[in-house]
Image 1: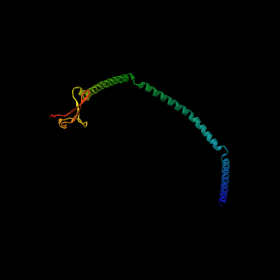
Image 2: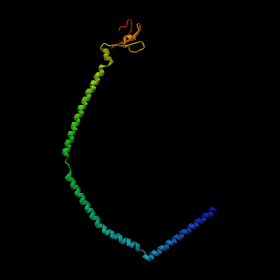
Image 3: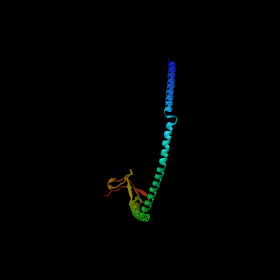
Image 4: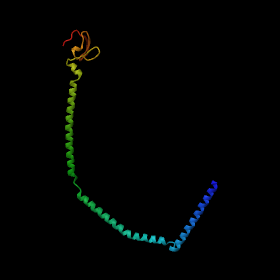
Length: 174
């Protein structure tokens, strides 16, 4: 059934193509009789030549006008060109002022850093110990800050600038 349907469909399509080709041939034949073979092309060709004749001088005139406008613009730019020597001097002065300001700021910051380093060096525990102070810890390693925190007989660890010692508490003073 499907093959017969395909065959009929193909036959119908072929018939339609032939009928359409025949109709197109008849239309072409009628157009040739009515217009002659080259009539439509001759009209278009003559219009094209006419446009070419008219557009040539118009394009040349437009080109001349564009060249004139370009010349005028170039002359205006040359006349209005600003002097760069004054601007260059101002830029150089601004750069010099900016460099000087940066140098002052760097110097000020350097002094602040050096002051901070000196302060930190003054607070260094090794320097404090070198001035005669010591660090005292109890048996658990906790710092002893008050005589009330130690018991009589407790063993303390004492750290000096150079070395250390162990001590036993015999008496606590307030």
